[in-house]
Length: 207
Image 1 (cartoon, one colour):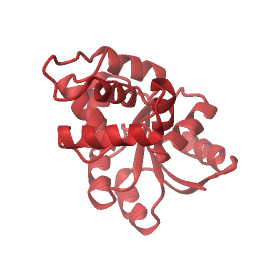
Image 2 (spheres, rainbow, N blue to C red; image 1 turned 90 degrees about the vertical axis):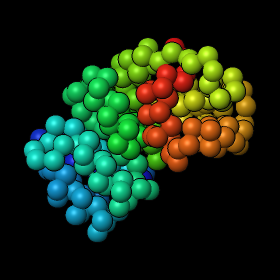
Image 3 (cartoon, rainbow, N blue to C red; image 1 turned 135 degrees about the vertical axis):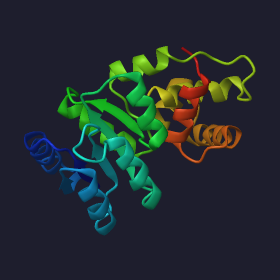
């Protein structure tokens, strides 16, 4: 059972998301919040697996909310769900600790799949977001990463889960995990969101 919390100020959208999640086997919405201030207090009392977070919230922004939530609850996967699709906000969200970034026009089935991917260690992104992010990348000639590590990091930045990366590169999931462990060490990061953010900032992956 994947337990989900929603942080969204639009009542209709928040309620629709809760209905979708609660109506799907294997998922449960355990809490909803209209702003980050309420979410920060509530999440500490009842910790979910995944949080769906809007950016344009009243009071504290979703990006600042991510930072505060990840400080006290680093194990939570935070998935952005927003109308904003510009590279500046995407980059800020990933740097703050978001594990993925979706636009609100994402189809319900794709949203549920993205929640599962985030829970399974992936970095899901809407197609347009993934294309925009990847198109902004350019490989650095003197990267410390090996060619295979760069390939793995590239696919991680495209929102693929460990299983999907393994299938794409025809290697085992264990090998993917080993490469990602080495990537974390070389980039001096501790999570997939930090790795993706650093790859974006330093242009470490293939276009």
